[in-house]
Image 1 (cartoon, helix red, strand yellow):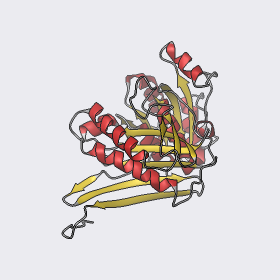
Image 2: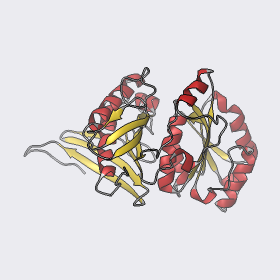
Image 3: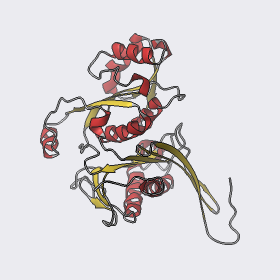
Image 4: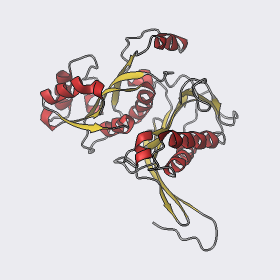
Length: 326
């Protein structure tokens, strides 16, 4: 069954889902408990998703069933009365960011018709994310300097004009050296390569690429966003444990060295991407609490129709003396 992704149908329902996760996580912001923040976000997202009229299956979630009590890979969600939908979630992208009150934490969900999102386990993935102008002109397996030259040429810039986002991890020491040697500038981030990928695909953000190794689930979510933004992600799964091979085979992945492109990671015709800000960031504002309500800012994008919408919502308490603050 195809998913009817109309402007008044599932996209706004999914906005509701990410809003609830973001509000729950935001109440724990700055308390230093990353696991606690993630737990309340997962619970809130799961509870809200049960009210959505879909026959949903989690294909990217909190891990395999024995590792995650809810929103695990393969879990059924929704009322079961609507269309069959594959769902990828990250109830709190940037758990450390939320725990420390640092900018950039968001709640995220992507959805598509059955088979529209790659079923990927929670392992690492080498990634390269570029804006639409550089789509088809870069190669994940090429030297860093070559890709930077290709991006610069596509954007009609010099390499030293480029800004590349890289996760600040010891494993990226050589990558950082290669980028600097090529002449580009680097913005190191502690977490949140999904938000970074969206920034790279949007003109005017001052970000021109994302490079390095991050989570494969975030790679699929990024691909869903790229489908809506006409950007490109390339990714290759990275094995760190002998058991990873068996996990991949159980999920139908046999070509371990394959380089996945955007359409491989998110091949669906009807793709929805929804995100809500938890802490302030360049993409979305934080959840804000006031005496008589809560204010949220969300992003929802769809491939059909091809739309990008920002939704600023005040969730006001009921009663005659409620004061609405803009």
